[in-house]
Image (tube, rainbow, N blue to C red; front, side, top):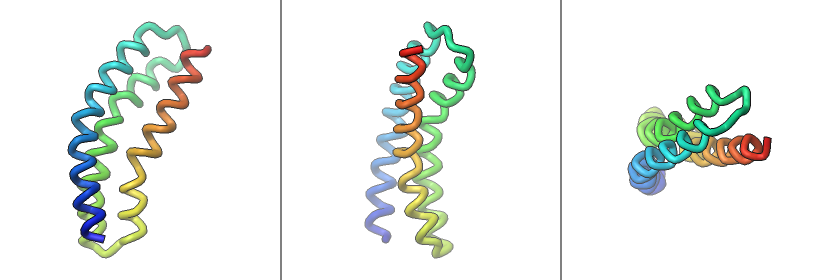
Length: 95
């Protein structure tokens, strides 16, 4: 499991930085939307880099406590969140 956590840490470090750029681009797109859930989309966009940081730090902490199932969930967290965010953005753009 430590190898997976090391890889996750590298990916999460890069993901947090790139997530800032992705969030900035999403905020520009969200600002032009006329849907009632614009506020929720703005918050969701700002949470993209946060999920990568939580995943990176949380996986190390969970591994230290021996919770391997939590580690797996934390490694998957930013990817599941990103997919859900993209789906909501696509639905919002079509609305």
